[in-house]
Length: 196
Image 1 (cartoon, rainbow, N blue to C red):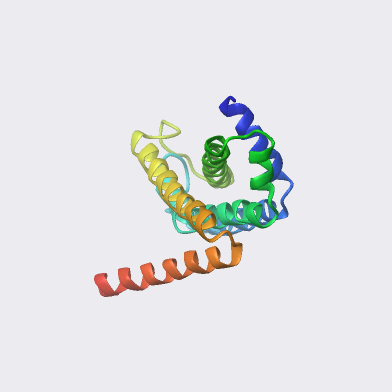
Image 2: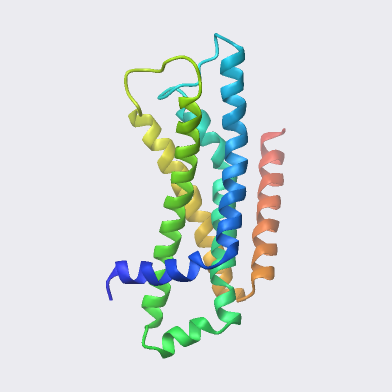
């Protein structure tokens, strides 16, 4: 079975879930607020420039904390209920091997990372179109690709953690609780180590 077919199967299941659309709308709203603030700042202060390619680090910074969190939460909300609803078992009984079932979930994770990254880039680039002032000669610099790659890697890590928790716990509530507890503990330890 081709990867395109697996991705299409997963997209059909995911696109019918309200959790996907609500989470993406919330992520877009949380990403749009900093973009609007940067546009307002650039309009109010003639020395402030919000244009591409100089603004890519600021645009991607707004998604570095939320993007991985939303990706992990979405993987849990889209994957864990399949065990309670027995659709995972039914897929295997209908002829889909376990390896292909999990490969479909990995492709879903890659699709979610692409979707969240595209949302961030489109909202950020759209905000620069509304901002006065011009940018540099290019649209994107090589260093900006590394920022995007870092953001995608962070989302892959948290999405993989959400997928792992979904497989082992098979419950959305428990998996979400452990993921959020991990985030709080990680943040507390990071602040303790850095002394802030």
